[in-house]
Length: 103
Image 1 (spheres, rainbow, N blue to C red):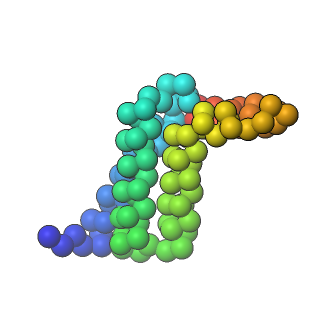
Image 2 (image 1 turned 30 degrees about the vertical axis):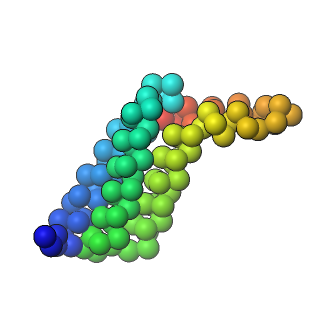
């Protein structure tokens, strides 16, 4: 089955926007299932942006950023738990930053 570039564009937009439905939640409201779904949606967006009509380097950069954001959001507790205690100010900054942007 062939999908034309215009349909890839629409699917990319839909996948991107639906990823933000989950990223828009507070971190403690994102379940493991939500996190997995968010990551899958971000990958779908990246895949379809790569094939979309009118795609450009900006779309590629945004898709990469969305994937990074999904992975950090999915794994933030693990990342923070591995930071040494002396970097506790960083853990607070990361937590605050992620919570502020997900509101």
